[in-house]
Image (cartoon, rainbow, N blue to C red; front, side):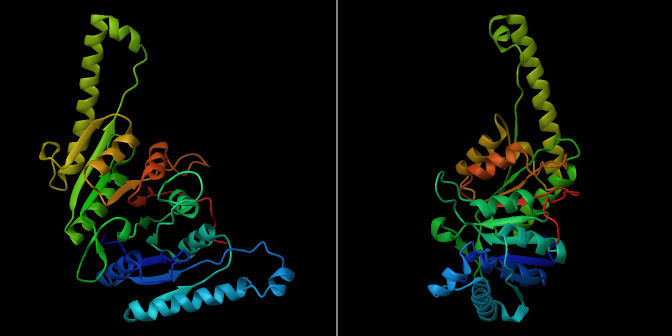
Length: 320
């Protein structure tokens, strides 16, 4: 992660020295990076007279309280870094992305906020908006008390098993796949973690019923699938070779099946602590900010995710 120079830590209402915050501090120290702490006071829909009548804190007072809490956290745990503190009022994910756009942060890191209500996923509404729409890498971490992590010398948590999810045959995807591999490799080296790489492929058969009953069709289909698998293997092998890995080495997994399901299955099988992945293969038409596979992985993940965007990605959020 040699390009980490400007880190934004989003507290999202958690003002304690949690492991995600300590990870951000550790990264800032390691890379001599600028560190900014941000928390956002949501705009209130409570009438001003009710706030006054019941002695509730208004938006300005809440922002001041958040500012004081973040300032104390910064001084107590990261004072040597001289971190900046920001506490705007507004829509949380919008204000965070605006900060990224205005100040050029190259990494956003925050603790996960599990969704409430229906569903059991790790990532809540604000998390999902950031993963889909924030232009810089978004790292949403999970606290170790819910997912036993070790400790390293800088008192930040260390990962034990990192999974890089790649798609080396996607059009114009090599730069993004290299970014995924670079980040995953650097983190694995930093934490002393095992790095695994997974690529899943599948091919829909138009006349599956005919292939099941016709011997000639079966043979033709088998040959076609072998050719397709070989194409995926060659592309994957070329990608991981630059990192000293091979498909036959036990740490590179070429699997056939639904991509999202296979990524989640491998993460579970390998006891992975973190998935490093791209959210979209390349910039697309207006209104498309995340691919189907990435959406399904994120919706189904119960471990930390570091999500990367391709060069040229445009967020729907503007700086002003």
